[in-house]
Image (cartoon, rainbow, N blue to C red):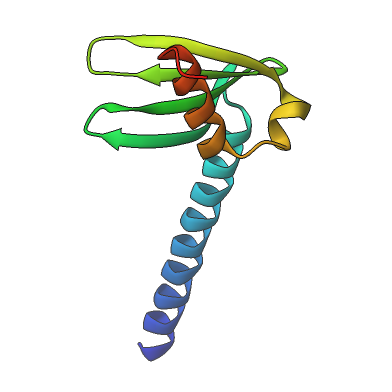
Length: 101
């Protein structure tokens, strides 16, 4: 009787570990198989407002997002974007859009 309980408990533990392992593998593969567009970085300015760096192909697009609209601010090559600071980049681009120098 005790042996049967130990075998069932051991089998249950193996099944639970297997479920968690498969969930981890599935989640890891989901992140790498994103479609043609992915969000690289996001800077929130409040509820439903912010700036995002979107990767599309080999380009990074900086977009401004509001509750009713989004606007393309600038497009960068992926290699150039890696060397830039996203927050400073957003400040520079918004100043240009507002007509500041």
